[in-house]
Amino acid sequence: MATYGYRGRLRVITAPLTTRDYDPKAAVEIPPGVKAHLKLDDRARIIWNDLNEFSWVGPDVRTGHHGTPYLGRVPQRLWETVRAKAVAAGIRPVMRSE
Image 1 (cartoon, rainbow, N blue to C red):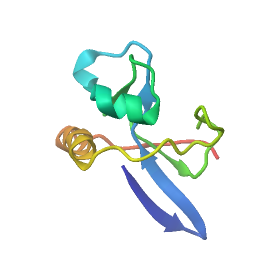
Image 2: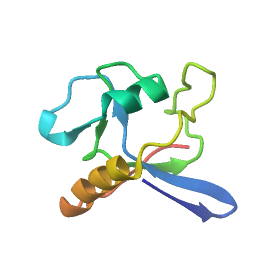
Image 3: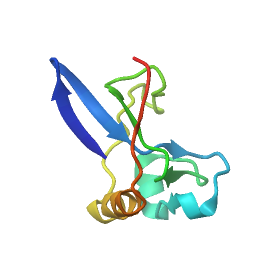
């Protein structure tokens, strides 16, 4: 969602990517082409009401199929949809452990 520098470290604000069951009202579906490009499970979606903030790369970040936590970029339109929902609802990120 966003990045910034703080005391020489990269800080990130993220919206979780998950395959778990969440309230459909809190999830943004990822288009099939994007899922295929990023090699995501068919159940994957973005949860816009559970933002997290931490220094990159945090302990809760899992690696993808290629051994890195960076899966790729999502299309601008998808990112804007997630951001707009979070902003409209006034969602504040949760500070996560380092």
